[in-house]
Structure formats: structure tokens, C-alpha cells
Length: 184
Image (cartoon, rainbow, N blue to C red):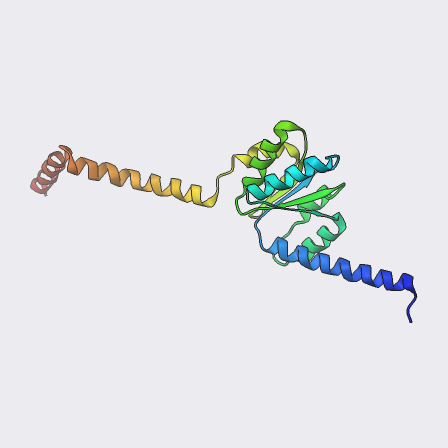
């Protein structure tokens, strides 16, 4: 029979391995990851923060820094090493689908206080370090918004041509075409 202290160590190691594997799966499943500091928040504020996250479609998870770093190191084809220096103190991870959602939630939540503070963020392999990045991150546009803007820009000249053809400009264009034919 094993010494109880050794059994506890094995159980703890197994628990840590399980926690690392869970973090690996969580991180692999997202391209938006915020590392925040929610220390010194009381239980009521922490509960409000969790509710604000849930309302905004953001998942929050408080983690141990060493386990998070080990999980990040296990993920292939992604280099999270730029985030490692920010793994100090208490860390709460925020996972989201939209890159700006956690930053907007943080801005809104901090109208009543100074926490949570942004340590760092990883958005589609771009790294943002420091709490001063919250304002920049909140203004980021999502892929859908950018695609919509590009489509609108591409459609704009076509709409102008169609508008000219439908309006009185159609006769002008026809006259130009006839003049070009006559020259050729």
C-alpha cells in the first residue's frame, strides 16, 4: 500500500494533467483569448463579472498560471510565448467568438471600478499586451463587419454605373459609345 502523501501527490498530478488537457482543448477551440486580472474583486463583483461575461457570449475561467503556460506550450502551430510574461498574479481567461467582445465587456464593467484589468490578449495570432490596449481592442472590427465593408466598397462603383444607366445618364453613355464607334 502506498504512503498517503504519495497517493495525494499522484492524485494532484493526475488532476493537474486533466486540468492542462482541458485548457488545451479550450484554447484550441478559440482564436480569441484574453488574460485578465480580477484579483481584489469581492465575491459580489466577481459574480457580476461572470454574469456580464455570460450575457456577452464570453466564457470566463480562473486558472493557475503554471497550468495555463503548460497548456499553451502543448498547442502545436501556435506560439503563445509572448503572453508568458503576463502570467503573474491571479489570471482569469476570457474566451469569445468576436475579438472585441471581451474588451467591450471590460470597458462597460469598469464604469463601476478598475477591475478586471487586461494583462494580455491573443486574437487570431495578434498579441496585445497591457491594460492600455482595452480601448484599441474594443474598436476592432470582426471578420463579418470587414467583409461587409469590402463588399459595400466593391458594389459602390457598380451601383453608380447602374444608376447612371437607369437615369438620364444612360443617354449620355449611349452617345459616348456612338462617338467612340465613329472614331474607330
